[in-house]
Length: 126
Figure 1 (cartoon, helix red, strand yellow):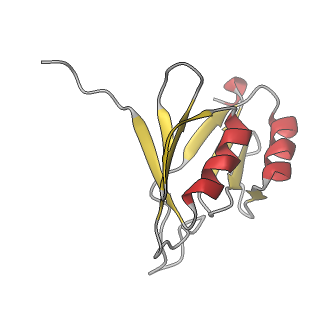
Figure 2 (cartoon, rainbow, N blue to C red; figure 1 turned 180 degrees about the horizontal axis):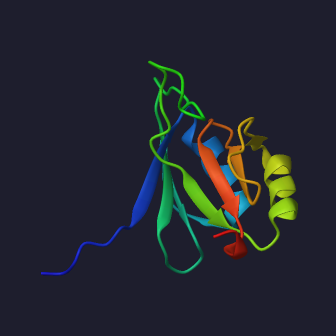
């Protein structure tokens, strides 16, 4: 019996293709597979993929999750960068939004075009 291996993280979105294009630009990933309402991207070669599924009833998460009864953040992506300010600016130029609440000075919380929170951080931040 072989061990389990995480192969893909899937995010729901109002438009899977649009969100996949955002993360392709941000991460330099390539499309591995695509269907009408589902796109899988990943690093060139191999590595854990990131997939997007169109969900017509999608409700964006709330960051921070302090709003009773609202969709809570159930998952976020941590993305390691070498230049926190430079990569934050690039993410904003690609369509991300800076989250109003920033819990740490050495990590940037941004929201992707569908509202999913993601964090940019540098190794010295940990």
